Length: 79
Image (cartoon, rainbow, N blue to C red; front, side, top):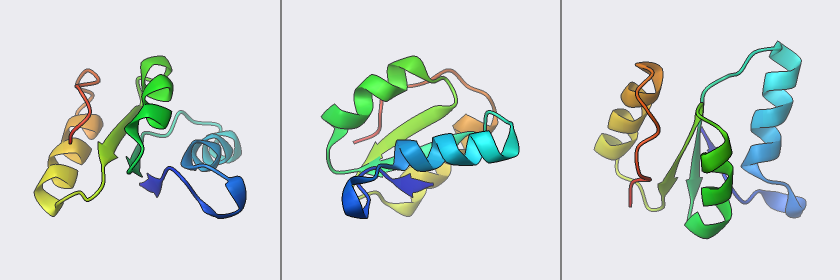
């Protein structure tokens, strides 16, 4: 789980990419963002990635995490 916009111009997508490279594994990830437009293009290209709009409540995050870990298809982003 990572925020999309990080300090210094970095993004959560860069973090996910670095973790995947370091582990040599397509790690599943969740992006939390207040800017869904920026994250949406990445979702189309990555079946192991989900995004959720901030603020996110715990129930939404748990459901999204469970769906991702269960291997369910990429649903529409939660709002």
